[in-house]
Length: 580
Image (tube, rainbow, N blue to C red; front, side):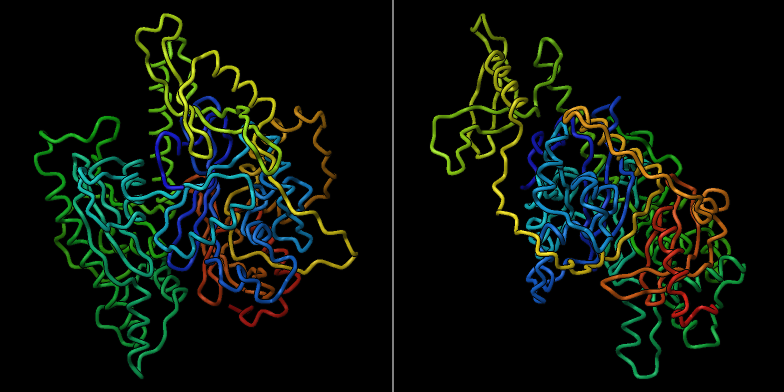
């Protein structure tokens, strides 16, 4: 569905939501938790990414009986979310014994206070959106596609055709630092977008990214070499750590290519920042940010995207030591990097609409209790193919009533099939009670095939990082058990005792010791090797950044790191770059 507020906001009682940003080559995912003590506040805490969903998977060109849409979805999820959706009995998403089914998802959903999981998507690739919609149709979920108007209205300066990903990132920057905001997004394409002190969108620019420029030189000439993304980031790291910037007058071909591209981005970026400060901060005494937003007093510039870290260095004073810098630049500003800015932007608008819905309900409802967003069920005397004549819907509006001494308000019910009706408070209480008894409609599923004893195909997980430490996952799992176990009368299964894990102990006691260590991981049945390049605990949760030998990158949480180290212990003998 497309977004329609307040219906599109997560319903009250929802424990977990998922957001997805569709990039040019990958899907970027996040899980958000809702604060029980502040039910209008959602915060992302778990991040990972996967490659685009391929046509061969969706069309099952290999005729794999186990490559169903629900199984494809299952393999894209980190273990904690996999268990939340499919239950503990479905094994973990990266296991060859992964046996997740639609039946499991349906059964697990009935243990949650709100059965359908809310999914919010920022996307410009319609093909990937169609595939995501097909995957999520296999589990109880409500997928909402966000558009530019959800982040900035046209009257706020948004121009027609401005990318929703840019607007979401801009909203994320405002969430952290306020207006005026300036965001540089470095990826396949490089963009910059800005607002002024009043929260109006100034506009921005679009151009080829760092890797696009380097690849263009290599592809369009015979003499210039190919430079991978991993080489670029490794060279930037070397210059920063050594204090020796790339010379403007380089004396080898690769450095000559890189320094020219870096000079271009650094110079353009400084020019954009200077003009942003001049335009966005003019008449500061007269212009104030919109009510409820902060003022970006420190002139914080935010960098995001795959090359966000490189941009962050290039835009620092003296270009972060990456390239030689001229003297005499006295611009005062700060530069921050946040690779998950889009997800925080989505979080910001969800918080806004959840708060508005609750405040509106309090104004309309004498008792102060909010009914808007609550799920209801009602019996209608109509024919139904599945024999279930109970129709579900949501309370979408509370309407003040004049001239009815028995009712101060009517309640608008919007049913899932699109029908609407207005009812009294007593009728509302009746259908709330019926929903509590019956929950969501039981989905008709095909008969399960009898087990024939054959071993299941060993499908491998897509490339993604669990990206967060064990404690974040434990919180989610404990919440699930707390809500599900009292309902079915069963206590959660006792966990098996584990022997001491030296790697796990080292992760806790000396997390920096893994930097420059080699690791490995299976993707689609092939073993890939890489190196941990840094440990970052500047913002919770901490992560280890890995750069693979083929140039791909991802962030490891503690759990993923432990798996990758153990995997390398087993397969490291095949690592051709083991001496690096």
